[in-house]
Length: 158
Ligand SMILES: Cc1cc2nc3c(=O)[nH]c(=O)nc-3n(C[C@H](O)[C@H](O)[C@H](O)COP(=O)(O)O)c2cc1C
Image 1 (cartoon, protein in one colour):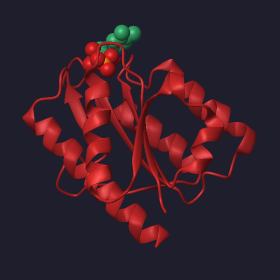
Image 2 (tube, rainbow, N blue to C red):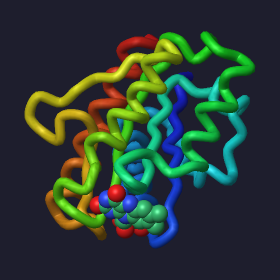
Image 3 (cartoon, helix red, strand yellow):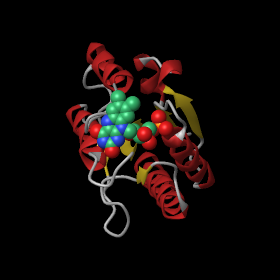
Image 4 (cartoon, rainbow, N blue to C red):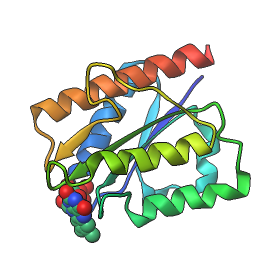
């Protein structure tokens, strides 16, 4: 059966809260999904999942170093993530603080790995973004995104 994972880095809990909401929606969308801090994930673990969703706080407009390190560590099996479903999300302090560039950085790494990333024509287009702690709007975005990722993954793996 297809499986998903949501991986996050979080110091003050905002990105972690988003991760848990997305993972819950993926599980509710019939895609069994783990939710893990990046410190507990080794690059090799990614090979066991069909959907990989990655969240990072916005640090100077890009992903936090531990998330970048995880992608860098996949170079030893470059190409083997090809065809898996990806997704990204981020929390920042400010509107215009680099949220979307952070998400695009994560998506770029996923595309280079050959992964499939679906946009959202109605919601947060590139992936859920939060300013500080997730509010009701962000919670809804995370739920919607998790559902969309689960649906696409089930479709591609059935
Ligand atoms: C090193 C560092 C760099 C940051 N850079 C930015 C930034 O460029 N833009 C921004 O809006 N917030 C920035 N922030 C704020 C965090 O993105 C924000 O507080 C986020 O919600 C933290 O997520 P967390 O609770 O999951 O740790 C930065 C925070 C740190 C610690």
